[in-house]
Structure formats: structure tokens, C-alpha cells
Length: 481
Image (cartoon, rainbow, N blue to C red):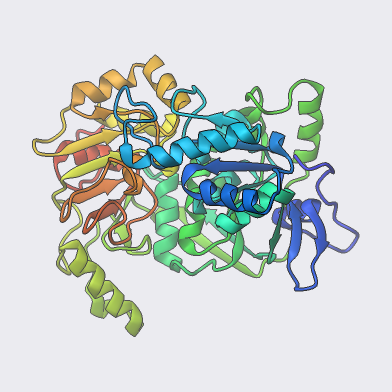
């Protein structure tokens, strides 16, 4: 947490929760207009850290605050049962470099043999590395995940990873502010994943360009903390710099007892600070929009960006239906790439692969939701279905509940923790032309492998599709309520 309490509002000045946290971390305003901010926690992953360490060594600099940095192996690791650091030969060099750099700089390192290993954005909350009011940086775009705890998660590039290692600071343009208020209650099987996909569809992938987005409203308060992490994870998919939910009693209960969170009197003192992290009445947002949750159905994407999405009861659109010419062109290209036809129902599109996992939906509650659909059923013939826990702790917790038996009995593969099929830089790749329905966050062309075709959906929807052999409505008769 920051050395000082969150910034207080001065008389006549109402602040957003983002502004309070940002101001608490402000070191100084730079001559070029950027803000120099202190970084509370720095989490490293193997694909963006090796070059940063190399540059650090060439400059003859050390890691400024090794106690504030943690390294984990996640992107290139194999998820095969019984894997080790050598199972994926293509990733071995990066894993060995991370281990050596962590040792040389006295950093905590979670390799594939460590019980705390997992995807950066899954382990940061579960270990208490990310806390309400903190500023956490990582060389990965989906660092915004930790906003679900009321933290500022900043995704950075390799040069910025080096800067944090050397100085424990970042020089950043202060994001603009935006609020999305979710009104009404969600219907059955409508999840945080559906809310953020619907948001991308309603407002577009540039709706929050350069913004710090606060998610607010009764539907957000009703979400469990892990669901808030999912919501904030995909802030980047609407163009945001970061997303966050103001912390509340549910947040404090989630954080209490985490391995690296404060304990005892220090925890109670921290909670006293965290309670101030809410937007003041009258705080101004540069953009303020509302989404009606009562109109949201389980979502599934049809194209090659998260804004190419519709409810499961919808259809692949006709590109001519878009008013914007550029959007029409992109939609036509996306539909062609996906091998679909305008007007065809989303329900019934055959799939080849079903992937449940990633930093978006690889937590215990996600696996529980998928298992509730899969229990007592069988994966359709010809479909490959994978369940990849987001961390080793998630895997062990799921096994303690017997979820691995549910999935295996249904015909799913039960894998080790890692990024897996979310991104095609490990062994889990969608073959060319194959169609995958996935719980991950991006459906870009070639994202899961060359010429792979990806549909994004919630864990329950992906499990339902695996069983049916096609995209289907998890709310259909015969599904558990």
C-alpha cells in the first residue's frame, strides 16, 4: 500500500476514487506534463522481463526495491499434467533466464514447481500482492485485472519494466476519467464476462480510450470479488488504461488473511484507509454512461474483436447494418475470417475446441460455474475440451472440491496452471481453421494460433458448448439453474 493515506478531498473539491489513489502515489509532475508515480508492487512474467533485465545489466543498474517485485512463470509454460520447466522446449530459455535473473537480483520467484505459481493477474490478488489503493505494474496489458480490488493496475512495455526495476516509479500521462454505471439486476447465467462483453458491443473498443474507468452501480456491488476481477481484466478491450471497482466490505473480506496482505493491527489500519476509497458525491467524470443489465443475455462473440458480440439469442449481423463505413468493412472481413454468414444464428455454430481458463476466467469460481454445467454430462464427440486453472492454488482448491473428477468424467482435459490456449506462445494452440470457444479476453485474428477462429464467452457458456458440440444457450431447458 502507499506510504501515505489516500488523498483527501479539499473543501469544494470532489474526487473520484481513481484520483484519490493516483494522487497518493504522485511523486511529482514532470516538465513534459507526465506524472511520476510510485509503484507499490511490480509483478514480472517471463516474456517481457528478460530484455528488461538485459538492459538493466548493460546500464550497470540494480533493482531498486527487490522486496516489492515478484516474478512468476506463466505465458510459455506447458500446462501438460506432470510438466516441468523443460516440458515446452521453445519456452525453456525464457524460463531459465527468469529464474537466473530473479536469483541474481534477490527477487521472489514462482517457477512451475512452486505452489504459488500461476498467471500474473490471478496470483496478484490471491496472494495479497495487489491490495485496495495500491498501484501495481506488470509487463502485460491485462494488469487492469487488479482493479477488481480497488487497485490501479498498470500494464507496461519492456522499457517501462526496466524503469520500474531501476527506480520503482513510472512516468505516465494521467488517464482521463470515465464511469460506467450498471443498473438493474442480471438475469440467470449472466456473468461479469457477459457484462463486459456487452459493454464492448454497446460502446465499442475505443469507448474508454486513455481512461481510468470506474465500474459502478447496483449490479457491480452485487458481484463477488472474483467476478469484479474478470470485469476489470477486460477494461483494455474497451480501450481503457485501467479499470477499477471501489473497494467495499466484500473486498476487505477477500483480502483478509492473504499471504502477503497486512495482518492484525496493520490490516485494521489499512481498512481504515481503504474505506475512504470511493468517489465523492459530485465527483466529475469526463465520460459517464449507463448500461441496463436487465437487457443483457449471455454473450458470445462472432467476429475478431470483443465489440463483435451479441446475445446468444442473436445472429451474425449483416455488415450493411452498420452506419459507419469503416465498421462495415471490418465486420465483413471479420465474418469472412470466422467462416460465418450474415444472418446465421449464433446458437448452433459447430465448435472444435472449448477452452476454460486464462487470467479472465481461470479462478475457482469460474471452474465451479463450468463444473455445474458439466456435472453428469459428456463432451460431444469430436470436441477437444480443456480446463486450465489460473494458478496452482486454484488447481489445488478445485481438486479439494473434486472438480477435477467432474471435468475428467465429462471428458475434459484437466491441466496444470498457466496462460495456455489464451495466447499461442506455448504448446496449447488452436489448429488452422479450427473453431474454439474460449473464456479468454481476446478473439483477434491468429490469437490462438495461425488462422484460428475464436468465440469469447463465459465459463458456463463454454462448458455448455463443449457438451453440445456447438455454441448453445446455457439457459436452455435441462441446464442446472
